[in-house]
Structures are given as C-alpha cells and as structure tokens.
Image 1 (cartoon, rainbow, N blue to C red):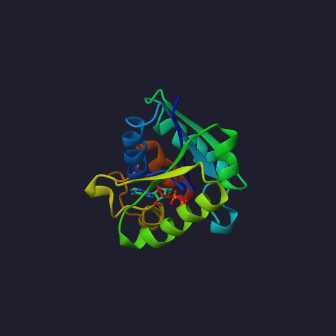
Image 2 (tube, rainbow, N blue to C red):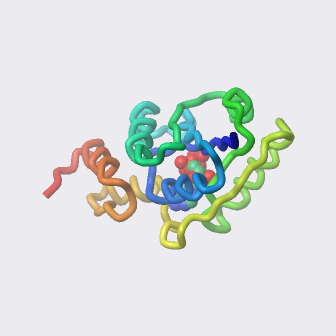
Length: 162
Ligand code: ADP
C-alpha cells in the first residue's frame, strides 16, 4: 500500500490543489490531504472549515482522505505510515522554498521522499492568496475554485450574489 501525504494550508482549496490531488491518485494507492493548522499564516478559514471544503471537493475520489495535523510534518507522515510527501510546483518562485523544505524534511527523516507535481498549465498562476484577494474585491472566482468554496468565500466576505 503506497500512501502519500499532501500537506498544505488549503485556505481555501483551489482547482490547482485539486489538479495535483487528481494526478497523485494515479501514482499512489492512497492520498491523505493533510490540512495544517498554520497559525503563523493567519488563515481566513478555520482548520475545520478548510478540512470540510477539501473533503467536499474530493468526495468523488475514493482513495483520497482528508485529515488535519499540527506539529512536524515528518512525524505525521510516520504516524500515518506514509512513504511520500506530495508538493505542488507552480513556477520558479515556488522552487526555492520547496527545495529547502524537502531537503530539511529529508534531514529530519531520510525514509520520506518528497514528490513534486506540476499542475495543468492553466493553474500555474493560481494560489489561495490570489483567489482570496479577487473574492474580497468582488471578482468572479468560479473558474478557480469549486462552487462550494466560492460560496464560502462570498459569505466570509459578506458579498451578495447577484
Ligand atoms: P502551504 O501553506 O503549505 O504553501 P498551500 O495550501 O498554499 O499550502 O499549498 C499546498 C501545496 O500545494 C504547496 O506545495 C503548493 O506549492 C501547492 N499548490 C498551491 N497552489 C497550487 C497550484 N495552483 N498548482 C499546483 N500546486 C499548488
């Protein structure tokens, strides 16, 4: 049984994340999407809200599970009996941080491999941050997130749907 953990803030989950998850299902028997507490990033959605939104977005994928975690990622990976960590790589801007993170995780636990996945090209410009910014200004994010995430964004920002 090959299990990969896909960790992240998912604040909120976007079509870019979902594209990475979908690709991952072809490589692994099981994928655990692990929603990080990440209090330093001051998320817009609570961890439960983020977890719920991911859960709804992947419910058609039987090999994908959603969980929440805090503490060290490598400890969580061990606890879940996983072999790999999946991270998404969008552009050069992601590379330096992701490279540092992957090598640090390897230092902490040599057994765990990090797998980088590239999304479909149309999602390479997509980030949770930019989706929040557009939604907060009343812009249409329906091409970037599932419908229930769009609804959650509108209600957070108290924007009326017309
Ligand atoms: P974090 O706070 O850990 O960066 P994110 O939720 O922003 O969490 O992202 C989780 C992972 O998904 C990261 O590896 C990030 O690079 C990747 N990711 C985010 N958006 C996209 C996207 N549009 N396409 C591919 N990967 C993405």
